[in-house]
Amino acid sequence: MAKPTRRTFMAASAAVVTAGLAGPAEAAGQPADPQLREMLREIDPKRVEAIIRRLVAFGTRHTLSAQDDPARGIGAARDWILAEMQAHAARSGGRMTVALDSFIQPVSNRIPAPTRITNVVATLRGSVTPDRVYVVTGHYDSRVTDVMDATSDAPGADDDASGVAVVLELVRVMATRAPAATIVFAAVAAEEQGLYGSDHLAQTFKDQGTDVQGAFSNDIVGTGDAHDGTPDDSRTVRLFVEGVPTAETAAEANIRRSVGGENDGASRQLGRFVTAVARQSLTGMRVRPIWRRDRYLRGSDHISFLLRGYPAARFTEPRENFAHEHQDVRVVDGVQFGDLIEFCDFGYIARVARVNAAALWSLAQAPGTPKGVVIDTTQLTNETTLRWQPNPEPDLAGYELVWRETTDPDWTHSLPVGDVTTATVDLSKDNVFFGVRAVDEAGNRSPVAAPQPSS
Ligand SMILES: [Zn+2]
Image 1 (cartoon, rainbow, N blue to C red):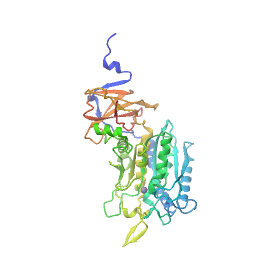
Image 2: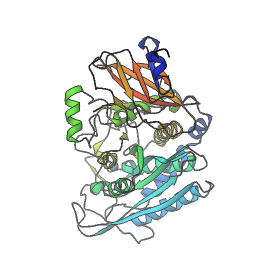
Image 3: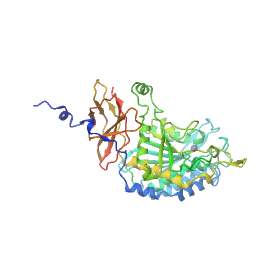
Image 4: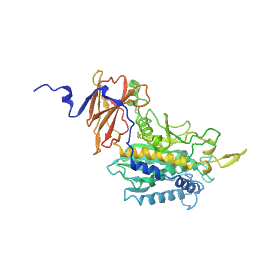
């Protein structure tokens, strides 16, 4: 028998490819999806406005405010959000379920007495790979200057009725659709007291071994006009996305110090995916990635997911007016303080909802991010071999290698390698950064997974 060539020997499970075959990296994600375009059209600024007006009308939604008053306080807001989600879920053909995720937070920082905290959660079960989950949150609690003041009016129109409006609009337009993967829509509480609601939600996912492959916090997404005399920037939304993973282990940190990767954490890959699929021509919005976990002195609910090792990011408006956040409603020297609805731009918030819809739908319809991706480091060689676990999707077409110069911000080259679980390319792993993504028969691409060294 003839000695098999290296190519034929590896053909059954592997690809051996030449870097010269690579094309420019096509944008991650989706071909134009008619269902997504429909949903983007259905997102309605008038509904956004109605949601925020209703939430503001509860007076305060402070986490320590009344839980049993039907008109004022966080309990009334909780019940209204629950009823809204249930009404939308009723049109879902049983795919969407709504539940309260409720727990007692013991005495802790900014929680002076044991307090019931309740997240309101709608789950749209995936029709093909329901075990793969994406999460979107906004927080429905609000505050004024004193974070312990549970009685003063705390309209929280921008922070964060705007984020809840995004979540509720997504619930409404997606309830009648059937994404391949599962999408969880959560209005979380106690963000202002210390992320307690999202912390409980993320920990519950972790305890249940849920495969959350992306989570987004929408927090302060109310306007592109800071109302401070600076130019209006109503076509930009920031996406805060970390590089070095919050949950990085000491061993992972050692590898990163050795060979780099501070720009290739799972959240950074998620950010690249979102920028590609929520492109301005589709959503009317420029996603401006900010390569840090969050703003100075602030943190939002995506951090609860990052702490559990889940990829996550935060949407927020382009420039904030701090006179409108976390402030008692008052006028000082003719200047209006307070988080009032008059400073919200409902068209802007609808566009942020469209960005979220494009991101979530594209994630849910594409294959999942490849798992177990390693780069072979068992021998010193100037070619590169990558291995990974097979994806579970029934319509999987195969995989692509992607790479870029180590100094480039985003992937510049992609190379289809077929439906294999290992591939070798004649390029030195020392000189570029590599990644792997999955592609389905419709051409939808997953987020990229960066490899760990094989041991
Ligand atoms: Zn907030």
